Image 1 (cartoon, rainbow, N blue to C red):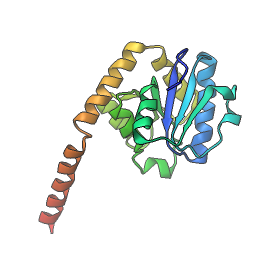
Image 2: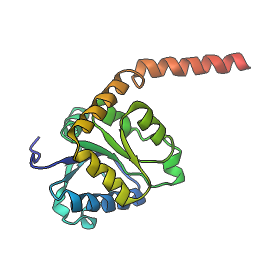
Image 3: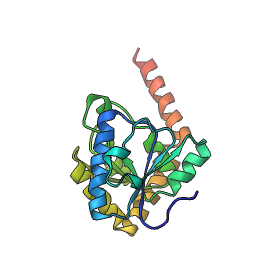
Image 4: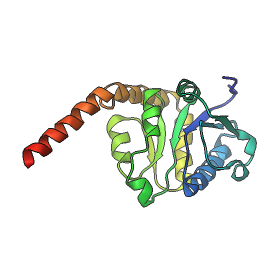
Length: 186
């Protein structure tokens, strides 16, 4: 993939809200203070220019538009995947679909502790959560980057969750059961 191998690589896929992008940049700057060898891989379409907010901006890598297969290859090259979400109504009330991609490639995640993310990440052992605070988010990221065994454990559990509880067959069965239950309530 032509990616650097000298230092940890954080990954993020897809677009982002402006306030989340600012949070992301502030958190990555904090990571760089502890791990100046870290790089940040933005995979696929990323709709913000965060490089001017990063010091040094050269630590941010972009894949640009890629196929689904290439997206998974880029994410597979990452050590930790990120879900830096501000505590907003838009973020509290949604499921970040990129978490599914992170689980399917078996990568640990660091996410903001909002909505149902703390429960899901804790229940399945997918990674670590942090408050809506760039310094604490960075601290949890550095904790993972400095603990290869913990990264491997979270990655294994993420892949296991993707294969079992979050696979399409299981999810379809749950949805069908919900419809059946709703029909009987009428």
